[in-house]
Amino acid sequence: MTDQPLNRRGFLARAASLGLTTALVTTLAPRLAFAEWNKAAFEGKTPADALKSLGVADAKESADIQILASDIAENGAVVPVQAVSKIPGTTQISVLIEKNPSPLAAVFEIGPDMLPDVTTRVKMGQTSNVVVLVQAGGKHFTATKEIKVTLGGCGG
Image 1 (cartoon, helix red, strand yellow):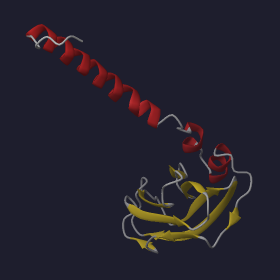
Image 2 (cartoon, rainbow, N blue to C red):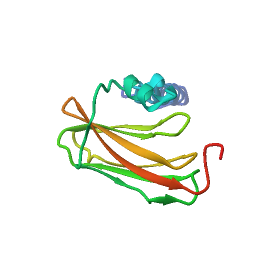
Image 3 (cartoon, rainbow, N blue to C red):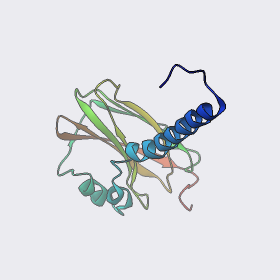
């Protein structure tokens, strides 16, 4: 660039360049954030289908996973569920609802500087087991909690 004072033409050229850069960043950033979308896992019709699509061969029950949720959900349309992993090296936390039409409700990638503590709201059509699946050190661990639903949220 030159040391000349900024004239109208120069100002418009720089503004257009900034606008183009902003448009590219806002267009590409969401695609990069969702690059790991596992469509097959979310479209699985049974918990076994979802687990298979997530690459889970066998998972061990672990007392180091906490599911913080109410025992009874008054309305299945909005059921808050919190999952906390105390397993070192946790890299992923998934939430599955066994009796839902699409059992996989959420998958959270946990970075090295993040606490393995996630909260989400899920829909539940009926009383069901909520399964939290944790991936840590290349192994899979689970915890299960039954939540009773008094008013269905998935078509109920």
